[in-house]
Image (cartoon, rainbow, N blue to C red; front, side, top):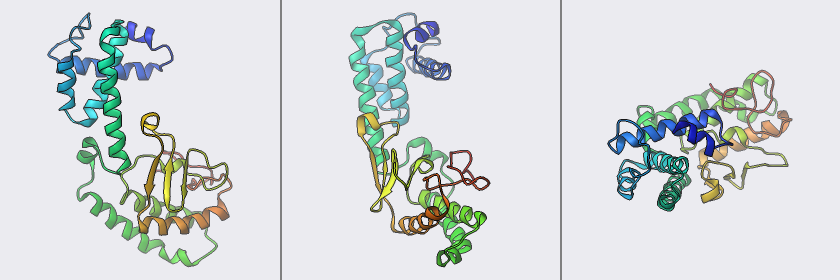
Length: 242
């Protein structure tokens, strides 16, 4: 079965194939099988109903796993129902993300105190950097400290993932930018079905953004809003973590 999955997923990375395989095995277990069956009879509409009730995150993962399994089996007659489940789960997931809400998994992993805890930390960080808001010249360290505050303020108000590292303020703006107080994200997991995300920034976030934008225009030659501490180059999820 794993080899068949590789054959029908020729453009997939091995890591992606392994992920699909693990999800197919988990789906088979949910269906009551110790191992993945040799045929597609177990991928029923009743199973689709069961994964719908398992929570949105599992629904999304297992719907795709079922579709990938059917492709590996070569069972075309069942694909429509599972393809519809993939679209349905993706649409619901996209709607949840558009509203800035957390998934069940994110809610479980959310820090004790939730948004209140993040807001408290953002307030504490602001106390440390608010003196910079009246200055036009910052050191690299000061720029990074204010950037850290902005990131925390953003995530204390908006439940998004790693969207900030791609935000540009100079043309070409690319897939992620902020305009008129709205964050636009054109490339994300559900962009094909949901289109661009448009998130209206909370007033506190917008205020911090305007301050950081002024500094970025003076210091960031890359055109990206966020910069690394040591080199001043564009951020990534790893280089701008703190």
